[in-house]
Picture 1 (cartoon, helix red, strand yellow):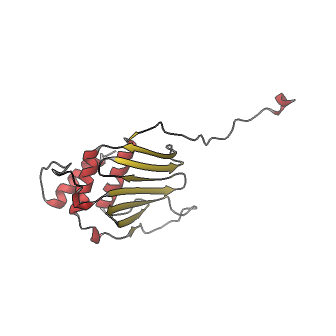
Picture 2 (picture 1 turned 180 degrees about the vertical axis):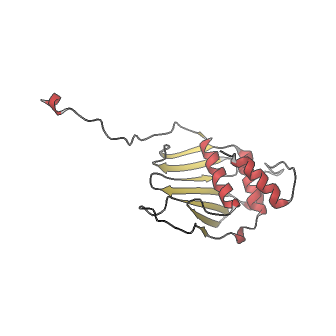
Length: 177
């Protein structure tokens, strides 16, 4: 599986016509482009979760059916997050559509396989971009993949709560008598 952080670096270099560059914290530690938070929300047939990332690496998470149940606070690596913030700050976000979807040749019984939402927040201003079944521009796809990548590597303040959704073991009725 490709590393979203390296995909992000290459996409950023392409968009800015730079060959080599170090991305990360700015000298004044202010988030690039005034972006104060990034968020991801995914929902599908078996899972749903949302996470909000602060520029300092703090992540707020809530989910169900995804193996990481409940609400929690954690930390993610700051450098890749700031790389994404920098890329988004230097991109023309107004050129992005509000929603991306593939032309459906088939319809799933339960609707769509999954929906993803990318949230970009600058102060009180919020921009939400929807991606259905993985559709979107390279920027949207890389942003969503990197946020998931960071979530997979987050360090949580408390042990994850996992709810066992397996059916109860069968009971032998003869033993009850």
